[in-house]
Amino acid sequence: MVKKRPAILVVNDDGITAPGIKVLIEEMQKIGDVTVVAPEGPQSGTGHAITIGKPLRIDRIYIYPEVEMYKCSGTPVDCVKLAVNKVFKGRKPDICVSGINHGLNNSINVLYSGTMSAAVEGAIEDIPSIGFSYDDLEFDADFSQCRPYVRQLTEQVLTNGLPKGTLLNVNFPKVDRIKGIKVCRQADAKWAEEFDERRDPSNRGYYWLTGVFQLRDKGEDTDVWALQNGFVSVVPVQFDMTAHHAIPILNSWDFKTD
Image (cartoon, rainbow, N blue to C red; front, side, top):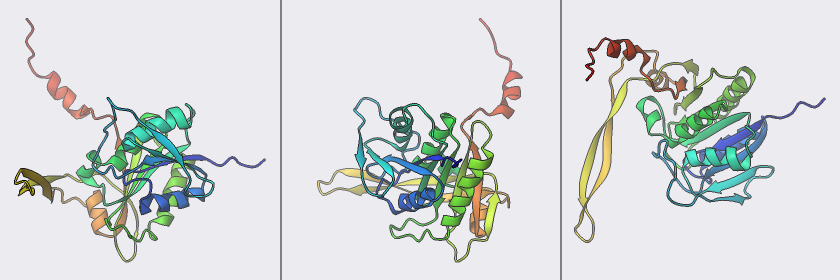
């Protein structure tokens, strides 16, 4: 009996023509049958946004041979929702992979990332999901070192599964030679934002967001440390945002009743 190839959903937030998604499609074709639903244009920084109050559109396009491919007018999360409900028609793909994003989504960036939010939505739908990101913002970024790790991690998830409610946040360093994989935790860091005030040609004021990444974590078990030391960082992420350790503290408070 011929073993059935896994059904793989590919999404991203850089847009359907981004070089990163091309690499991901090529690697996934070596593993299974690929379906792509991706934004028609860049959607970086959209987080878990969804489209309400205006129509959503998906259109079949033909770019890569033997790949069922759709561009979507919405956000990365919209892409996953439409893929599950309309493209796959309620049946679940065997895995959802998102990326490869141009730029890191380590540490606190996971909250803002459209790439990771697409993967989170996959996990919410009980689909094993991975978000891939690479520390290179350039359009012509060289993803060659990422390729074997993309395949290996995808195959491991297909073989072993993931704990319920969990997905993987995978980031690749830009180094001469990747040393290997480190399973680690999300580093404690934040962005210290600044809003650069400028004037447009009509002399109206506007603001341009800038900022500095502030690392508050010196641990050697974090994604930031792994990337700085030439390793692929793999962080298991959950969408249950309950601070379970805080529940006993809150229950010790003296709540008054009327």
